[in-house]
Length: 66
Image (cartoon, rainbow, N blue to C red; front, side, top):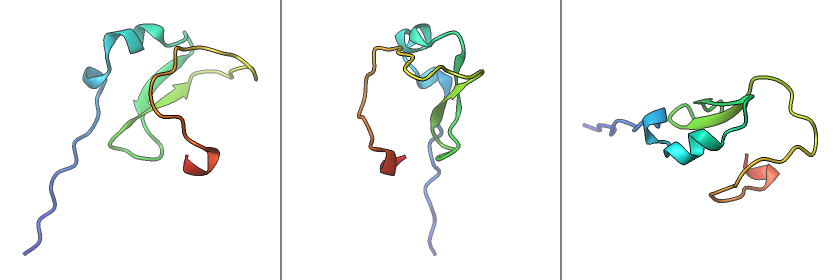
């Protein structure tokens, strides 16, 4: 008998307030397209190449890792 543990789903309640306040106007957090148990960063309109926003907190990933 194998039973799997339920997967914890990340919600907006898990996101620190300073992160939500620091999001650019046209960026939102929604369920990830890669991992449905996590939140992903989504643009609501095109972001110009070279546009910078932050600060970035976390681990940077290589293109091959995302």
